[in-house]
Length: 181
Image (cartoon, rainbow, N blue to C red; front, side, top):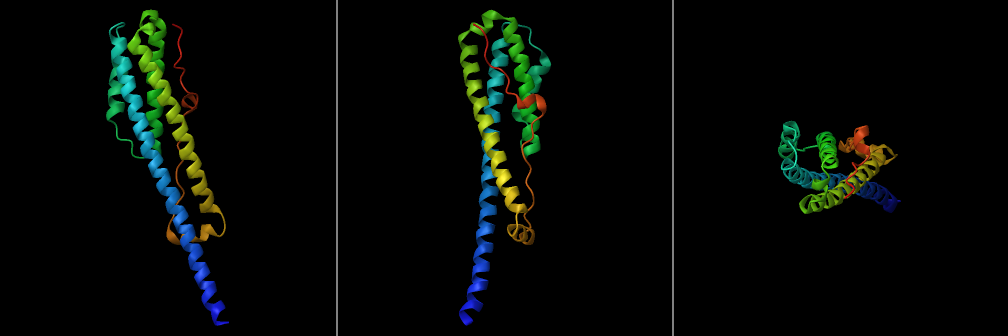
């Protein structure tokens, strides 16, 4: 009977420790992914700036697009909401640049633009992959938070639901970075 009296509380404590560690693992994975998304968005902003510079020599480029890109490159991206907003604004800026490229066939064929567009396509793929992975980790975390009996542990230890990366409808579809040469 003594062994049972010691074993049951020990198993409960081990379970609580396991659940706590699982929450911490998922929370840290989410934070790491947000940091990776921030880096990828910065790369995207740098590529946008390169494209703006390349298109300025061919066309009188919209001042607001250049200002928008500059503002996006320096904006702090602290949480999922700010990252979602920056992603939406960068998508709109890419759409403006692509429209400019379509209007100037010689520009589309220039080597710097072609290389930058290829790099941009790679970054777009990276951002999509990271966004998917982040939301998957958040889903695991939030599911664990709501499932019995881990919800009891979460409630007792103060864990709260985490926010998904939300993308506006127009951003859910990746901008087309392909153009005819």
